[in-house]
Image (tube, rainbow, N blue to C red):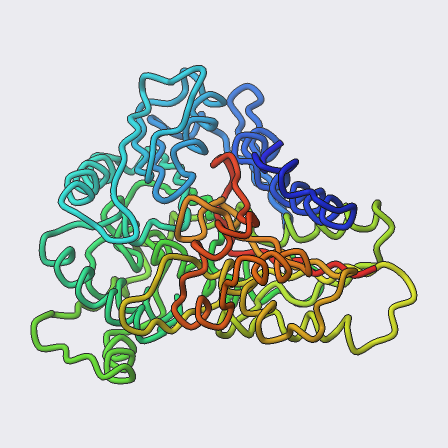
Length: 452
């Protein structure tokens, strides 16, 4: 069970079913299981599969095989890959926010930890090690990289980038900038992001396995190939260290101008535009929020709910984001149990001295507060971070009429907590925080509304 406080949260039959559906979503992005299922070694051939296609790599074509892991979850993913490669791995480095618990550790894989969401001197030291490995890879060598969310902060190449990132990132976040805008700036402050790592590793071959923590605009089925629009989305994951960057220095300047941030102290750089650096790079969507959302829909079906996937790319301010999903159920005659699901990444516009919380907790509290007239005994709302970290050690929250009633008994002012973005404290008091084992990929946030 990935949800560690499942029993405490399952206070009603409907809550239990909601949590079972959430659990199915988490199981679909279990890091070790996903790597084991998607990557196979048969003799000297490595097979990598995703929802779009199968990739076959003949390791006999390479003198050395290296592994680089960047981002949250990349250490566990790199360790799982190292186990598959065995003696065929020459060396590897992974930088993550924490070291995973491993039964067997490959001595050729070095796992290091950096700081997130803000970079530090520790991150610079680790990034220089990654740069050194990439530079030492020759034209007959292969680098297999796991690129995961959080890599933008963990990958920091210089003191200059560190200072600029810490300053500008805070200003942009407080102003409500979205992930595309944030990472556009990050790319042009860095020598390794925005395709910089691919340039550093040239002329080595790179297979980059990308975990999409940014929402991708899927409509219906996945595209059967890596389209331009898909690569654009993937280029924002960890600020695209191995993908040709289509943004320019002017695009970054426009973001700063939009949020009225004076760029007087920092020099924006152009990202590598010579396409020769990317000729031997293969960027593969390894996993996205589509897998857990589909798994949740399938579990809802088994539990006899009629399901609808509202969006894989839900946006907007967190407190209002779930209102369309709630109204979709509440303003229609429901003649059978229904489930509405979504994946995406919302934003929070912070005021002065905000409390502790995250997008998912804010989405649930916002739903309970702004749509309180629609919250009845037969409706449950869940919003949760796919990696189990909703800006805190909590993954998110579950909310329903029980939450509202408990808040009333405790005399908790929902509007006050919402306005102060103090959602962690609110749900801690109502007992509705979700906690998980931290062993799943970060593929953006996931949402569920159940009604019977």
